[in-house]
Structure formats: structure tokens, C-alpha cells
Amino acid sequence: MNQLPDINQVKAFLLSLQDQICQKLSAVDGRAQFKQDQWVREEGGGGQSRVLTGGAIFEQAGVNFSHVSGATLPASATAHRPELAGRSFQAMGVSLVIHPLSPYIPTSHANVRFFIAEKPGEAPVWWFGGGFDLTPYYGFEEDARHWHQTAADLCQPFGDDVYPKYKKWCDDYFFIKHRNEARGIGGLFFDDLNSPDFAHCFAFMQAVANGFTDAYLPIVERRKTLTWGEREREFQLYRRGRYVEFNLVWDRGTLFGLQTGGRTESILMSMPPLVRWEYGFEPDENSPEAALYRDFLPVRDWLAESE
Image: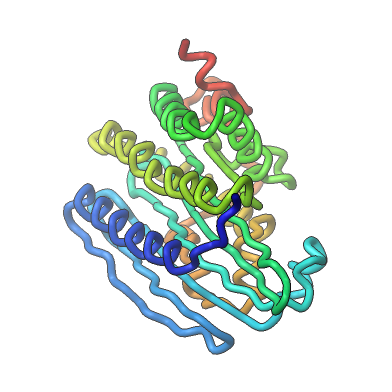
């Protein structure tokens, strides 16, 4: 029998998740601490944004919690989901983006979210979404396999088809269409998860949320002592431009947040602190930079290759 969604249970988990991730990142960095900004949304709801800057390892890391509500949804949402027209809504989630200082440590993004739209006399429309993805600048096959193995392991209790399905969804979603290239090496992405029941869906969202640090922090530990110079830094800043392009042009979460009157400073927390563009850049043939385009950005089945 399907359960009705427990909004308070989801919110309590998300607030705890924000605390745990911030504590782990601060401990790994060893120098900087997160600063918190609480905010209220005039139309309903609010959140707390936490940002770490100038760390020994993390140049900038943001971990946001938001819980917003409203009487109606923007036209962009109801155009794709007409059954939501005339319903009030609540949307809550934790979203994080980590931009390390070292070009050898990948940028990473994760988010988990819950949405519910209600109308008197009718059953609520609800779903979970989220995932995590990795954006390396200099690729390491060991890291890519670890990242995807962790994702596959957390999906396994929920079915053999879950990891392949959500890996493909991530590969398809985090694709920069105007560049015809992937943003990174993918991971997991899921949305509209509302079957077979609330408890099952909530358990999967929790597994993804808790699995992020298991996937990411071992990579940070492996790469944090590698030395790098101006060449690697310049390439990192150039590739960060792709991150900006995707978030501002294609990302649905950014668009939803801006269109629903979310806090702009928190929504754009995902932007890297420093970035550069270069006209017509082409990496030198057989260079470490060229290897990123050749060996890591094209979609690969990392787990099949590790067997």
C-alpha cells in the first residue's frame, strides 16, 4: 500500500545531511570553515546557505538547504506538467558544488530534492530527484572507476537496472549541447521518482545523498598532494567555463530557482570563484589536457572496463 509523503521527515533528513557534509568537508580541508547565511523568501519558505572559501584544499564549496513554497507554479513548470496547474507547491532540497583549488582534484556537484504539489480534494503529486556527478580537469581512471563503483553499489539494493538507468540519465543530462561534449564523467541523475511508494523512494534518495562523500572524498585524499603549476591552473580555469555555460544555459534547477523567485545568491553559488574563456582553444596533441577530451569526456562504461 502506498504511503502518503511525510514532508517533515524529509526536511529533517535534509537538514541533517547539510550538517554532515559540511562537517566532513571542513575536516578534510583543515583550514577554512563554512559560513552560514539564513534567508527568507517573500513568497514563502526560505533556507540556509553555507559557503566555504579560501580553504587549503577547497577554493570554494557551497552546501545549500532550501524549502520554498507558493500558491502557484511558474508557467515553465506547468507547461511540462499540466497536472500541476492550480496547485500549491513545496520544494525542498540540499544542493552542493565543490570547486577545489588543485586542478588534479575534480569539481563535484550533488543534490537531492523533494517536490509536492497539492490541491484540496485531490491526491498530492510528489516526487524525489537528485544525483551526483564529477567534473575532472585531469582524468585518472582509478578515480573514475571508484566514482562509478560507489554509485553502482548504492543503487544495487534497489534493483539491477537502477544504476545503468540513472547513469545514462546523468550522461544525457550533463551534456553541453552547444559544445557537443559532456560536462564531466557523469554519475547518477534521477527525477520524478514516486513509485512504488514513499518509503521506497525516500530510502533511495537517502542512499544517494549519503553515498556522495563515500564517492568523492577518497578521490580528494588521493590527489590532494600532487603538485601543479600555472599550466594546470590555466587549463582548470578554462574548463571551469564549461561549468558556467552548462549551469546558465541548460540546468533545470537553476532555471526553476530563478523563475520561482529563489534567492539568486544561493542559486548561483554553483559558479566557480575564478574562470576564464579562450577563443578557439585546442589542447596540444597527446598532452595531458588532450587526454581529458579523448579518454574521459566521451561516455564510457567504467565498470565493465574494470572487470
